[in-house]
Length: 475
Image (cartoon, rainbow, N blue to C red; front, top):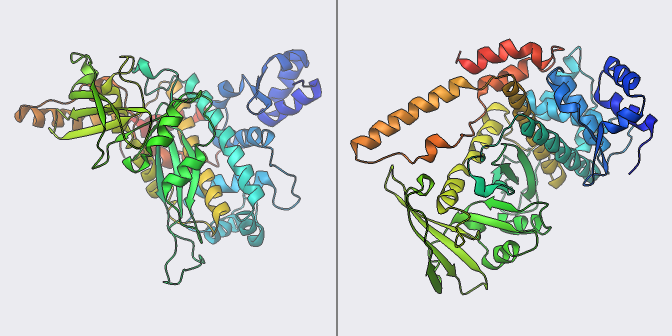
């Protein structure tokens, strides 16, 4: 794919302040501007190497605008609208989620009575939430938004699974459904009931970013998560993938076929009650490896309703002495993946519930914005984009040496108490509680700081003293 000098300057203007564009254009004169661009075949468009380095020197609102421009440039469904443009809609969606508005009318009234915000006609706003074209546009922009956040996370060396080298090359996702209350005007069935809107989300356990996965239920449509998940996973992944989910996601033949495809996709879950393998082969493992602490047995098994092999890991928690049985399509027989890693992945699967807690209590996303599938997908896209913005800013301040020390200190104190209680009972805490980095919930204090400075023209670098105060101590 080629790009003219004029096209390069157009992209520069989308992503940089005028003085930065002038400087780059003068120094690079088109050739160097082109050389500083990298092509990504997945989207067929360009990304700027300098982009992530400049984010720290941009205000929050400018970061949002630059990322939205990047997303729209990569969207095949974006169109020019004279009234309520795609850019206006995207900006409004992020502002609504970050602003904790309890309803669409509440948000529109806020815009109307604000001196700095652009008014949006009520009909245009709610009609856009029902548009299938806008739904596709928001989905595409959300994917590009996550891509940018992932690049910044890599730049900041954010990798919560780095201490598990056997997972290198795998995309590891915790998948779960998130329900919200139905919209006010949702149609009711013959019994007077309404469907609870539900969207499947996927949390990347490596970097903490969220993806809106697929809609499950909305007004006039009820479904189980499994059919929706199977449809979502019908296309092969770009990289080998591990899905960590509820035991309800077990579909033996589906997951065996997915695991043995050219682009493998694996499942880690717990066994269902009544699952009875027809063949069973014991697997040796290193009992002296700290990660395998608590693992009592590993087996290669086969079930009557599928042709492939699974592995079962029996585990006794050294802290509580409770027994668990985990199920996976990953190959544990060759010794490349430790059985304790399976236990750990299922344990940290519950991090997605902490994200849902952020959705509910910090972003106040508890009710559907409108009726229908398009509205559900659009709302899920904006919620994930806003959450990923929080993770992006968290990564940016981490680059400057700022982490959430108050949360780290609180967790360490709680862990010390757990250790003492376990010792009194003759038990221990599992080693991975202290040797593997923990993905903490984004603190409410940090989110409030971002919300309060969202309209400010001050760059992230200028807000570092404020972030330091809020990250290092509770108010």
